[in-house]
Length: 272
Length: 89
Image (cartoon, rainbow over all chains, first blue to last red; front, side, top):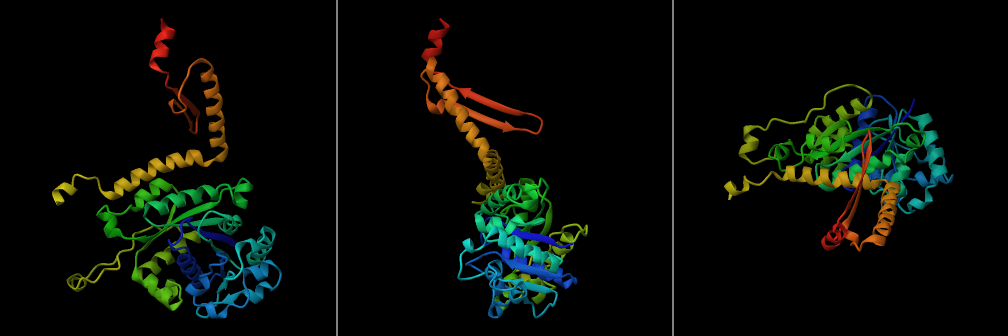
């Protein structure tokens, strides 16, 4: 039974695309068939973050409008064969996506894959609502920062009314993914803590991804961080989050790395 | 300077408190139907009061709190001093 997951946040720049790529790759590495779908029409970037930008021939809109078959638009990842990407269109605008067309494509994806992960555009308008409509579960990506938390609260409200599940009177599963977290700053009370954000948003936590240089390095080379540096702290956080999404009950820990004396001496920033 | 800084609450606590107040407000106003209801109530209550006393728009506060068990409609009308005295005598 396929599961449709939307990765959303309201606010832009909090790590939706990075998290979609990293979670998608993590789930695929466990042997499940995964497709990541870019809903950010006009501003597609999932292909770039995943290193597939030069392999895009057809896109979501071509498939929605019937100009291409799904199999023609899907790009299979070269590093992980159970991972595919369905890119968004860069030239068209979001109005080219019809609700009926999206519904048809989602049905087809559900038949082919175990996981359909939809990368939502920022905002709360039509594009974001189309991305969330078919979801069984949502990952709400939040930074420990006031504007991000406020926008997440707004998106959580929308998930409860603007999804197919909500219309049927069912509950959509919601998971909080806290990204760009800096445990040291939170300890100094310069940053909202995990507990603060959980208390405010009151949805279950699926993972804490620490602020880390590895995330930018991964997108520089066009690889999900879970593929390019699987041992890094952010990758470990994403692997754990993927296991929780698959139903495993494991405690969420704040990923930290011991800072060595030499790191401290030379002022090298610890990954924690 | 650091001994002064210690008297301030940590910035994360300020952030948390600001968010809690803001979101409590936004969540109650978030449902459009509800804010329409409040606007309508405000308008009609104003009309009724205006028939008897001259009162400022801003002096009438209407709040609706939705609890799980019960909801509370709170109407707060500030009546001008001289008028309430006149009525009492």
